[in-house]
Length: 252
Image (cartoon, rainbow, N blue to C red):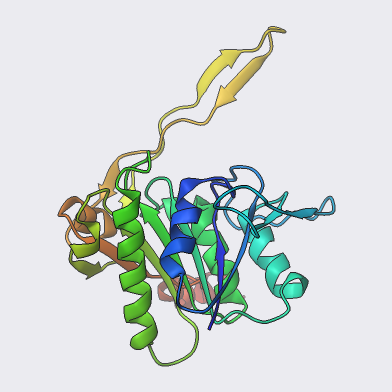
């Protein structure tokens, strides 16, 4: 088996080193990760400049291939010319903080996994619920359990895409799993307006809103109840329920 590992926190983040270690023994592991933290870049591809790559040499990162681009760039470049062999699985993370509900639309971690899925490769995005890398070792063990289980029990019908959120707990590898749907958040907090040294206005994006739909069955609910949330995702954004109504509205 060949596994491609990527993330959005950058190649120096503790989460990607933990995920690589979790995958050891499964087969050949290739790591292609962003040079800088690229959180919140969603599915962006860099089209306005060429991308450069170097191999990391530091302890725990030796052999990591590093791209000065987005998480999607990393997986795209890996799959379309960098790797000699097509991977059998793409795993991303472990992200520093949750990717639940609306977060998945912005997440570079989920986007990197989605890029693999778009190329027809099964993919899993892993995130810890809270920031700070607390109990990361336990989260990595949980990730390995999930990878082992899914590989042993693959769903029928082609590639699949999973979004996994793991509570920051020392017993994370022993927590129950729940298959969930995405919840919803309230709108984010207002931007924070400041002034730079030249007297010009600058803006910081506000904090994410609190859960608006966090009821039973959602990823928010599962993690608050002490379970690992596993959400199957798709990329079809079509509002199928309203297709007929829109045909009636726009048909002359």
